[in-house]
Amino acid sequence: MFINTASQSFRAQSRPVFPFKIFKGKLEARATTEPRFVRWALIITALAFLGLFVIMPLIMVFGSALEKGVAAYFAAIAEPDALAAIRLTLLTAAIAVPLNLVFGVVAAWGIAKFDFTGKNILITLIDLPFSVSPVVSGLIYVLIFGLQGWLGPWLTEHDIKVIFAVPGIVMATIFVTFPFVARELIPLMQAQGTEEEEAALSLGASGWQTFRRVTLPNIKWGLLYGVILCNARAMGEFGAVSVVSGHIRGLTNTMTLHVEILYNEYNSVAAFAVASLLALLALVTLAAKSAVEWHARKQRQSECKL
Image 1 (cartoon, rainbow, N blue to C red):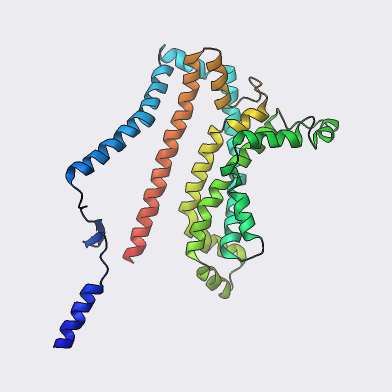
Image 2 (cartoon, helix red, strand yellow):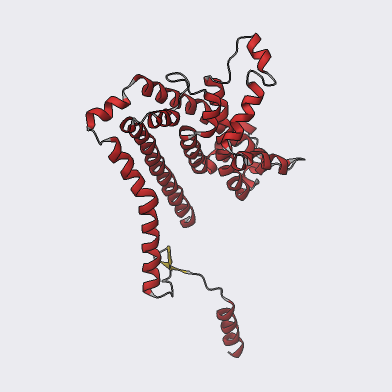
């Protein structure tokens, strides 16, 4: 009896204390020990910060866009240069995002599933756009493909336009956005390990079958999350695109560049009208991001119940 009591006491003392409790099969956070006024002060501070730096600017953008009425708003969006900027933005994102999707999946699969020489160097190169200014990345493309750049004379001889043309805008956008998908998948695939893929290969599955039936279902939510962030950055990029575009109205202006030109011309209503489209894109991206996180969380909860 003494041994049983001692063992129970030892287990009770050695049992870790977690900041949550199990209630009806779910994990619920325990109430914090801070005074109520501290919690309310933190909540009010966070809400005030969001209201001042997030909500207020959005209200100002939509308010300024509709300052002269709905007719002026839609007239500014339907203007030929604005439509050309919208088309170019969509085209750039339609090219850059799928290419970054392919690169991100391949890079993450290679880094997470295999060991090879230069692995850390590859990870560092993937993170490079996070540390390099977008303006500097645009200047790099000018030095390579510009008229006086390394490949400039050869491109001129063959009548190929990269800088101050759509190819340069697409390449600059790809550079600043390619880490998003890879960086979202690498830690996810590393945490999952290689056991399931090895089991599938041992059962006779090919590499493509293993990826399609084992790897892809495990990373689908992280993949969607990375694609959403990549698309949002591609449509909202300004610095790198500004350097390589040439600011040719109706030809090489994206939505962000078109907003800058309109604002510099003191056409604030039209500028805020186009800017409101970018703000709507941000809100849609936020909603899609929240939906992906919700589905991923529900999937994890269902897996935990099993």
